[in-house]
Amino acid sequence: MKLRRSERMVVISNYLINNPYQLTSLNTFATQYEAAKSSISEDIAIIKKAFEEAGIGLIDTLTGASGGVIFTPSIHLDEAKTIIEELRDRLSESDRILPGGYIYLSDLLSTPHILKNVGRIIANQFKDQKIDAVMTVATKGVPLANAVANVLNVPFVIVRRDLKITEGSTVSVNYVSGSSDRIEKMFLSKRSLQPNSRVLIVDDFLKGGGTISGMISLLKEFESELAGVAVFAENAQEQRERPFTYTSLLKVDSIDVANNQVQVEIGNIFD
Amino acid sequence: MKLRRSERMVVISNYLINNPYQLTSLNTFATQYEAAKSSISEDIAIIKKAFEEAGIGLIDTLTGASGGVIFTPSIHLDEAKTIIEELRDRLSESDRILPGGYIYLSDLLSTPHILKNVGRIIANQFKDQKIDAVMTVATKGVPLANAVANVLNVPFVIVRRDLKITEGSTVSVNYVSGSSDRIEKMFLSKRSLQPNSRVLIVDDFLKGGGTISGMISLLKEFESELAGVAVFAENAQEQRERPFTYTSLLKVDSIDVANNQVQVEIGNIFD
Image (cartoon, rainbow over all chains, first blue to last red; front, top):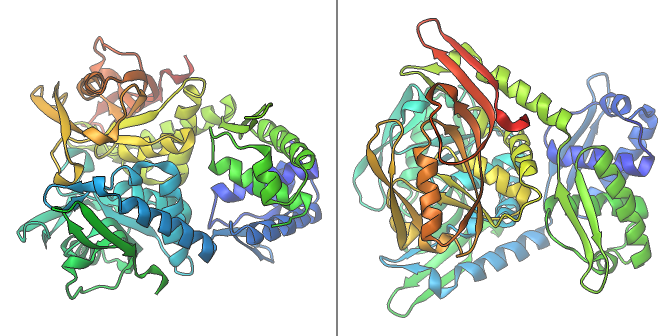
């Protein structure tokens, strides 16, 4: 496909955006768009400048025989702050309070543009680390894990609280369920995670931390390593000594069911 | 932010790719990038040509006071066919067979680049219809619904097979579970779907069709309308008279557990 320079830049930008963290040789583009490697190199220089100025991400060029370009998505601090402030305001809406002192989150975590932005913010925190997979627990964490995995361009693995025949052989661990203080089981399909993986754990809401501790003990069963923990929101009321460090986007300070008020502030992400 | 034309085109392309099905006025771009509206208009013409030639999608320009540009993602037939053929080959791998005649799919539906492509293919089938939401059932359908919703830029709603306190008030219906022929219940949070929505139902695997029929009856409870049904794979062995039409990407013809063989062909998507 032969394209004019301006068109070629649009198409190469689209490719890089959809293939983050993936090394692509300039020859691949040169062949595909019937252009000289030097022209592609100039295109990349312009795209790199535009991506950096607009806070889309970084483009690194590796020289040599096995060289090429690699796109690392990022986000400007200002943009991340604005997004999280808006989410704080949305989460503070009084009609989110559910009986029992829970907060309704599902609408936020099922809206593509919110998920994409949250995915960008969390992935950005871990962009300098080697991450092989994103792990979460079914069901509420799945869209969040999916969003982060999209940006990091790695698979996500879903831990389940029940056994499903369609998962094949599984490994299970016991964990203390925060909501009930009971011992429960969680399961992960044996084939879903390679040994020696570095894993980022994400979840929608951190209360007691039992679920995340459970996932960390699952990692050991898979001879894998924890790269980090990130949550959409944490409950400050249940602040206990937690056996892991984590990044939170939002912090719920109090839920006053009687007066229908929720106090939400920015989490520890910018600390 | 003032950018050179070539950089501006890269940044506007990125914006359109991340904001599909959304009308944006040329003035928004003109203000943001400190350029004349006529220059933006020329940029858009180049982006439009590049997007069409590369099969990224269509850009429509609406004139008038409330005008602007709107990007509709699409996919070339050839590209869609190649992707589905690759998936057919992956699904035919003999080590996917699980005891009981099930197939392990989770790895495919948790890999970002596969999910993105499947999302593009399904969304493309429904791109000329008004879709307000994508619906699926927990847990396995969630990444697929998320991927399709990302491309259509609409929220997705997750029907559950169990009651969760964090969902608030729910509506439930009975359905016939395909795997057991038992009557079971499925639940949807009252706030998750607006009345009068046109809904696209997606799921990972279609066997008897009981789950999808259940979701269709849920739509009635929410005074909403079915826009279509799309599944990643269908089981041809369980072909019954189904009370709905659907699009399938793949069709599993037979699973021979004894000889460790799976027969998979392309679904009805190109019929």
